[in-house]
Length: 438
Image (tube, rainbow, N blue to C red; front, side, top):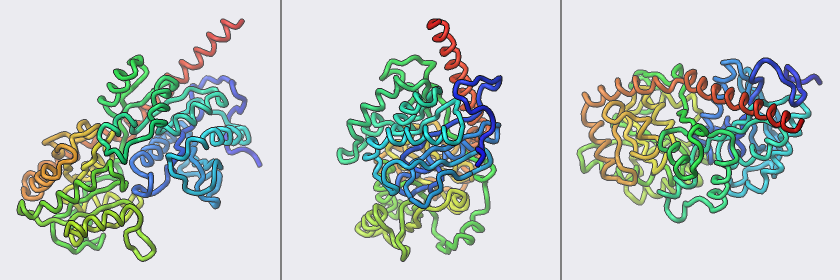
């Protein structure tokens, strides 16, 4: 069967074109998984949508992930020019991400064999998260291509705000420190992350570029709230607070529940809709989401909390439009994708003044920022927006304008420029090495 890939397949073959194809590595979670499921969140959306836009701009991308279902095909075309490649490494089932590190050598070897079978070469390896970063480091010897890494979150920053039971492992801390030196380039989602990488590791400033994630402004657009609520079947006329994200302690859902509990005392009777987590066959909260339901029951607010599980990404705009305000109470976010998506839909945000949210949300213009892990401050921010129609309208207008700077074409062009610089520099170094050996 002929290969689906065009162009030369011999490694080291030079062409006038600086980039022919990119490999994007996302080992522990599939880029096509529904947001809110297990380890699926903003990073999944980022990896998938970046590849889509890069392909649109002329660079084909293969997305490499670990196969977790024996029925999953090895290669699936996600978009024209974008293939999802599911690599058989370890058992074909879900494996907790903290148990995946020993499987990474097998993953890298199988990914290399796949490229040989298909007769394809890669000019750049873009890894996402520390596990993928190590896989990319192993693949570099097979593919002889530069390695760009985006951590999305770092153990160092997460441990600074996490409870003892939720702290990241010493292994992750060690590997991330090593990867900062081993990667050819690093992408930081916000200026604080870039500064942390430079100051803590004393690496050259030109090795780290700040490029925020993007959003699809053709999908995330303003719309009519009553129509959206009607289409979603929401007949509750109370003000609606929306949360979208993984069921993870770092997301601050406990802070949100406590804030909802406090709202009636401030004069606001609001409901909260939580998107994320799993429902069982009967539609009841399952796994970690069941614990959220139990906590809401204990707090006496279960009747005001609607848990709808994870939803496909393309269905989120209607939920954002239906809401009066979106809460992002995370203890740490490198960017805050849901905040920016909500802003693009014209919905004001109350977010933690933490990590990248300080740069993504224009305080007083697109939403309000409050201290993380402070239920009273979050409740006050929600009440301020829900009780003031004029403020809500002004923030809505400002949110739409603020979100426009995160359009995918602009973001992908910046990433593509990094790819080109790394590929050209890598080839130049190879030429120099050849001259020295001669």
